[in-house]
Length: 219
Ligand code: DX5
Ligand code: ZN
Figure 1 (cartoon, rainbow, N blue to C red):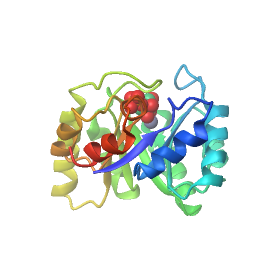
Figure 2: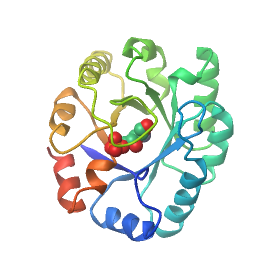
Figure 3: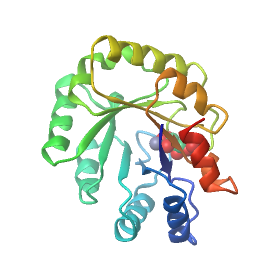
Figure 4: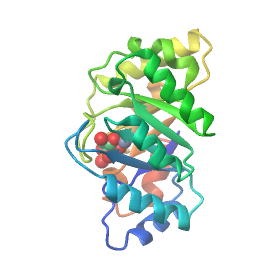
């Protein structure tokens, strides 16, 4: 699997050194957790903009932007300037499927890949109809809003169900999981069919980034 290191829990002081250490430790992407204080309680906007600016000036590791925001279009525009690999928006923020498809098209028209994320309580069947239009499905394995939570075990079943559906329907799409992922539970996500895992706390709190990322890639 690929690893997308969440920078949410990176301490501000010597953050540049931490980003450098994550890059040399082999992270495939930097996962930027943008929270607006409305869709979720925390507000990380200014910190994530600051970090995205640093990252864009010091590394070529692609940015995996995860928008947990209400005013989706505003934040799509603010983060497109960093030329991210992908921008992932939450299914739950759209009032209608048309609105969701509009946002998806806008991101693609700006040469950026699109991800759709669903919260633990959202059924995977609800997004089947938009799978053909997006590059990645981000399955939240914790309630979005903060780092350092425990992985919710029954979200793994959702990943297996999604994997079965996309295989049966020959849909080309990446499955990414996000929240509470560590070197112990990563194997269950791989077995369920995950292509990319997001990890923040379990990497940042480890004393060997390289070893932890290696284990997350091949659990
Ligand atoms: C939670 C974020 C996750 C989280 C991952 O809302 O979307 O990316 O920061 O961090 P850990 O790995 O600490 O759960
Ligand atoms: Zn995230």
